[in-house]
Structure formats: structure tokens, C-alpha cells
Length: 237
Image (cartoon, rainbow, N blue to C red; front, side):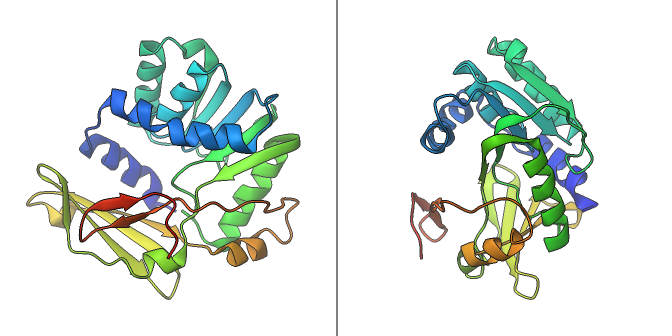
């Protein structure tokens, strides 16, 4: 997993986004949070918080959020965003590797959005055991997990996602991993790449078979049609 810090720090430095739009887009995740957790849920642990949009959006609703983030530039961004939105007192920011972080607190829910699968199966199991230890009795885990049937058919030409910034997806069928590469125009030799292990629900059941976690719900996240550049919500192929 040596690539992780370098990839995300580079991604955050390359991709310019609108704070207003990104905060508004967190509503679908907040809806999932409300759907799958009881009203008594107050304390959230977010793994890999990125620029902090979910953490800040949740804090604005009154949740107490602890976010663990590895990328240094993202940590600075979370701090500034939380300060800007007036919720700095509701967020604890930990700049560490969540495979190594030691926490004494326990949480009502652990969230890991858009990033699960950075390691191999054994490393994923190590993380899931750590997640279990961080939960309060009866706590919930909400995780975005990529499915192989979608990414196996996605091997697209390079896409320009904004002026001068390109991205390309591929799929490693042997290791069942989504491959995602980013680079600036004219600098393809300097591209950075992430690789995420994909799991079907049956694969996930096997992954957690020796861990005291139970898979209770699977919800499709949607599908991007790259020929038409249209996102279909909740679509399963």
C-alpha cells in the first residue's frame, strides 16, 4: 500500500472542486446515515476523510465526527473547511494511517466512503477487525465497496475531467482490482495510480467470516455511462 499517500496527496492537489457543490452533494450520504442508524447515533468515525466534506456536513447536523486522514494537504483542507463552516469544535482530525491509529474512544457508526480495498484481502481483514474494536455495542459500519461486475467492463479511453486534467480506468482481472490513473496534460509519464480490490456481496461475506461483523444490507450506488457521460443512480447491471 505504499502508493496510497502519494496518490491521494497528488489527486487532491490536481483536482479543483467547489466547496458549496461538494457539501451539497453529501446529502445522499447523510440520507444513508439516517436510514441505517438509529436516531441515538451521535458519534461518527470516518476513515479516509479526504477534503472533509462528509465530516463537515455531518457536523453541521450536530454529529460529533472523528476523521482519520493520511494525506497532509487533505488534513489542512479539513481544518480550514471546518473552521469556515463553523463546526471546528464538532470535528476531531487525526493525521495518521488508520491501519496504525490507536483509538480509545468507541463510536456509534464507522463510515468509509469511496476507498475501501486499498490493500489485499488479509489487509482488508486487519482493517475490519480494527473497525469492530472501534464500535460501540450495536454500532453500525457503512462502507462503499466496488463490485467486480461493473469495473470488469470499464476500460475507457482517457477522459478529460477538467481543463488539462486526465483520468483513465482499467481493471486487473487476475487480482480483481479497479485501476484509476490521473495525470496533467502532456505529463502522462508522471501519472499517479490507485488500485482498489473489488468485492461482490458473496466475496464480502467470505472476507468477514472470521470477524464479528454481520453483513445486513447491500445498496447499489449507481453506474456511470462513459459513452454518454451520464450517471444512473442505483443502477445494477
